[in-house]
Image 1 (tube, helix red, strand yellow):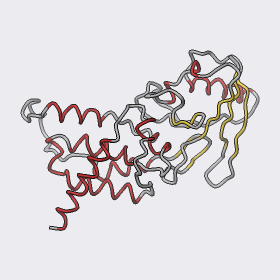
Image 2 (cartoon, one colour; image 1 turned 60 degrees about the vertical axis):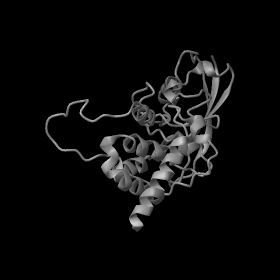
Image 3 (cartoon, helix red, strand yellow; image 1 turned 90 degrees about the vertical axis):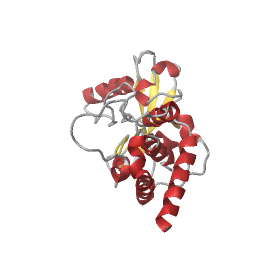
Image 4 (tube, one colour; image 1 turned 135 degrees about the vertical axis):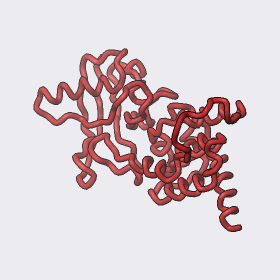
Length: 249
């Protein structure tokens, strides 16, 4: 399989970037997209050129670090997969594949395909936690949790924080990510004591990071590798309004 990779090269945020085309021969249809980039980099290193920088860790669709835009789509053409789970059989022999970083003000570029997504970490620090007493673990069934609530919470907790929702949104909104992180705690009894504080703090942190507002286009849901629905955004907005009204009392 012979392809051409048109990849974004940029040494640092302050320097100018451009697309550079590289031929890749010997790509196997069963290779993951990141394995193909490894093959490309091996060839570049042999020629004394600098390899293409990209993020990856687990390569199992769990960590969410392998974030890039492939042919205009976050994580590539397949649905509900990350970049590391996108395989070369999704492309045709002779294709030219364009690869670029996630582009958002809140995700400043570091180098090539690598962006700084620590804005997500700061949002989590603002309220993505619960306060519990230290000591022995409590009995698992001591706090009854309705099945509907636990199922919804688990759906929200599936978010891996990859940032594809931000990259695909015309406003660079992080609403789906924040909504999932708020919901998976607010839905459970353990998260109720800080429910209002959490909604206010995390949304304020999201705004402070420079993410755009949600205009409900649904593009975030379409590219989410875990299939998190935008209905969580409605839940987040409701939690925020209730919390804001309580603060006025």
